[in-house]
Length: 201
Length: 196
Image (cartoon, rainbow over all chains, first blue to last red):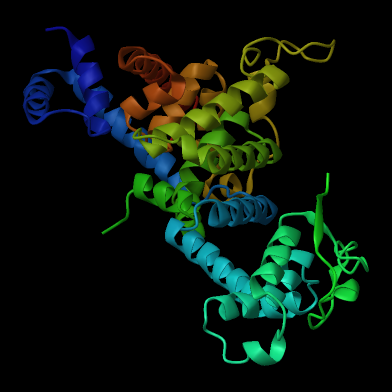
């Protein structure tokens, strides 16, 4: 019988890499072959010697182990940030967004106090009572606009809003681009003058 | 029940620092013994041991389904090859040392004639000397297979992965190594020395 095959099987059995049937075959062969039995015995003996030696042998220095530990720590710290669970990241982002929105909510009124109203806004504020008046929803129309055609006033204001310059004789609205100072706080219309309109280019 | 190496490396990849500690403790002895047998030098063994684990740490994310032990020793084996290329030791152990005072002594003889290590002084230097000398005379790849199997307890299929060789090649290397070791150790015995 070819002992080369069984030499291989002896090695594989020593490392626990044989099947049960291979093991049985090897045992049968060892019962009949002294050469292979000697090989198996030498292998076992060598194992024993090396094991005994190993128990007393070397170890890496503490510096080496410390370096490995430090490298592992650095890596783990990196991993910690890289693979933090997604829901935590999402939660943190949502919290930041809520804080941002809250800030906007509380800051908005204070910002609006400092905003200068546009000329159109001022004029609109003026004409709203007139609109009410025309629509018959104002009770104080007689006090405010006695003797003047309410519709004419309203029409003039609407034209101003659309960018039309009004020449009323005293240039009351000729500079309406700076309305806060030039526009009257209450309407004092010249009863005798006819409003003359010219389109502003 | 012991946690498998593969589970531990996955845990480390998820940020479990202690998982790596367990792996290092588990493989310190077999890996260091392998390196010591291959280099016969404490500082070189230290250096390669450290480099091996640093590579494991840095490349742990690339680790897939294969056996950790085979992967670890593959890294170590590659580093030993790099080291031997630098040192020119593995190929020149049987070559005679140069110089007029060498007297036909080989690098292998010179290597094992160094001062005895403490363990050899304690356990009787004959055994240690005989094994060291026999191992030093083995070609690099055969020695690597022999040490990985006999000292580090690796399975042949893991050794095959570590050496990037087929199982039959690794088994053949082991057979040659074992045959030479047996012959050399018997010679030592005949010269009046004992193995055990």
